[in-house]
Amino acid sequence: MLKSLKASTEGLAVADRARKRLGWTKTSTARWWQDAHTSRATLRRFWHGDRIQREIFIAICATLGISDWQAIAEQCEADFDPAIPESPAIRDWHEAPDLDSFFGRDRELAQLEQWIPTAKIILISGMGGMGKTALALAFADSIQAEFQGVIWRSLHHYPSLIALLDSLLSTLERTSVTNLAKGTTQLLHHLKHRRYLLILDGLEAVLQSPELETEYTHFLQTLNGDRHQSCILLTSREQPQAVPLEGRTIRALTLLGLRNPAALDLLKSRGFTGKELGISALIQLYRGNPFALKIVTPVIQTVFGGNIAAFLNQNTLIIGDRLRTLLHQQLERLSDLEREILYWLAIWQEPVSFCRLHTHFLVLRDPAALLEGIASLERRSLLESWCGEESSAFTLQPLVMKSVRDELVERATAEMKRVVQSHDIRYFKVLRSLMLVRPGTDDIAGDQIINQLRENLWQIYGTTLPQTLHNVLALLPDKSPLAVGYIGCNAIALLQPLDL
Image 1 (cartoon, rainbow, N blue to C red):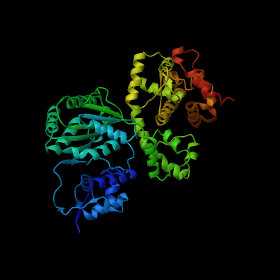
Image 2 (cartoon, rainbow, N blue to C red):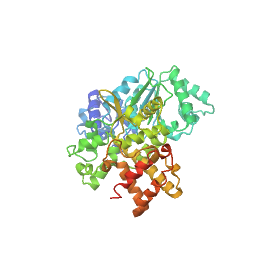
Image 3 (tube, rainbow, N blue to C red):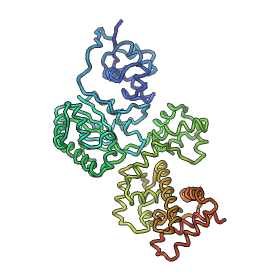
Image 4 (cartoon, rainbow, N blue to C red):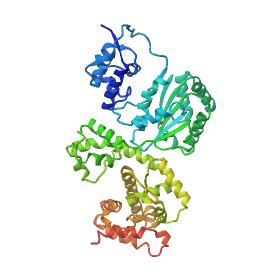
């Protein structure tokens, strides 16, 4: 009996279909090698068609649910010595996360594979939770055999570009870096002489600092402008404005939510059958965001007994602390104009055209500046565009809508407390510049922001809230219209149910 086995070409195809059904990557899903009592390195040998120990080959098949392991094995009389070392190619995955599941993304993987022969830089961008890191990991996992070296780095771990270069070069040549220009030149030397895949995960971490953003922009432009045979794969919640994402050598993929079949597979892996009432509506509500779907499913199962329709009837969104933090970090990066655009879209709760948006700013904005603000928000994947017959309109994804609404209510609450304490309306910012009742409607009950703000203020002032709001209104008569803005409209809207 042979001590070692390898999979045939047809057998690898069968195994690939089986692992996709389970939502696993080829070698980066920790559960796989743990359940098979093997290692990531051995899984790589399995997928490369190399021979591995017979018992481990059978265990890998069993973990995939393939009981007939003989059907996928290629019989060969030659045996192998398990002491023979692996290929000397560099495989540095130490900073890569382990995935619990990966579903769909066939089109995205095919697009990345099409770009990889000629692209020097590939950027995967998208809002928090869309699975950018998972896609990069699955792609690098599947394409690694085409490279002489694969190195994964999380940019959240490196306070400077020099620190990153030092880490990369310590892997490539075991040297230290003290000079940015020299370090970049050394790295380019390696990228030219061998074909490497460098994955830099979390570019948004360095975009938060103007100094770091400038450094990395110049670094990426240098890597794109010089001749080499390697590829740098980036992930980011936003696209760097200073790097032109076009041409054959630099490509960009904006990652949207999972399509319905893949989202259904994800939900099935979390204990649903895929036939529950409202399951398609749930996927649409969360726009196929895989991380958000993973967060909400335990709540539906434990609180609503798996009844998706009952959860949807609550008309609420579960975000979770981690996703809320990711979205908050994106909002923190916005300019005052970009934040005000999001606030107006959160107030309307429906697609708004550019012209309609422009006319409601308290201080009329330069149309060019407003267009730049919209373009910036689109680069950050925070807007949804709706194309009509005559013009385009913009709105927010439900997850972004909730995060923006919560932030707006929090800021408005803090402003009201400060004005009540100081009797100075200059502390009103959002309540002066934004009309929290949706323009053109008298449906006060449907205005979630006003209702949420009123609840917050009631928790603070209780039965004295009506008088508190009347006191605020009493501060307005001798002020200029520009100083008052929408303060009076908002105070009256807050008062209406309370005065009945």
